[in-house]
Amino acid sequence: MHDTVARPDEDSALIDRSRTTPEAFAEIFDRHAEAVHRYLARRAGGSVADDLTSETFLVAFGQRTKYDLTRTDARPWLYGIATNLLRRHRRVEVRQYRAMARTGVDPVADGDADRVVARVAASAASRRLALALARMPAGERDVLLLIAWEELGYGQVAEALGIPVGTVRSRLHSARRRLRASLADLDPVHLTETD
Image (cartoon, rainbow, N blue to C red; front, top):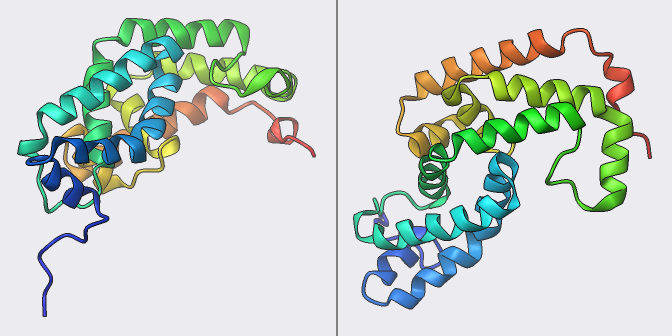
């Protein structure tokens, strides 16, 4: 027997339910807002992430009747919306990477201790990584960060960005090649944190 109806705990079931009971969409927010916010904060900074996270879920709520209910996981859809909104803020994002390249400080680091450890253990790598990200074409950066930070698979990234899987693979390959070239002379032994 083939079950074509989504399980009640799947995102698609909640989105379907929210079409008649809008309050049900709150569960989608509860499940995914923190991850979407973290992704946006790393890309554009905390204050922009607050606004873009809210906007992401407002757009998603407004488009919930168009959601493809065969997609049980809403994360690629939400990351796609967030990435599209982020494109409006590209200049801010590039400025942030350049500032990180100058200072070596990751704006998402948790607390003073983490900032100090990150600064001591990998400031050179952080600066060079940030500069490489700032110089990277936007499409490559989008693919790389969705895979590296949000741990999406190729298919999910393709869905999120509305591009073919082959394009995801190509952009990821190019992004990795650029990063290797930018960071080739760094000594990985000195980048390892010790406990």
